[in-house]
Length: 149
Image (cartoon, rainbow, N blue to C red; front, top):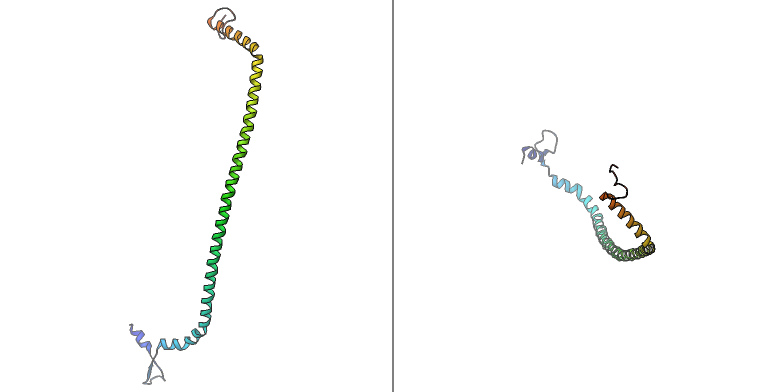
């Protein structure tokens, strides 16, 4: 303990120069001043504890309710996602079928047109190929492109 603290405990209680001194007791002085205040606050402190406990119960209930609601929403979203995914897949399959059928129909029409014009097209193509081969070989016909006459 510091010497100053020791001297603070013994303050003069009378007129200066008196030989009598009373020890100062801070704990007793604080108790005399503060005990009535704390006694008045005891009821408020108890009420605050009750309010706090009720608020904690209510918060826990809201948290459980929010967790239940989140689980319900998540479950519904998963079900909805599955349904939407299945519908999108079915729509894509239908589009693929329609596009495929259109391509097949176009290919059949083109094939029929080629088959109908086939002999004429092939005869012209044979003549073109034969003339190009003869030019490349330098036999008859017109000279190959780039060759000097």
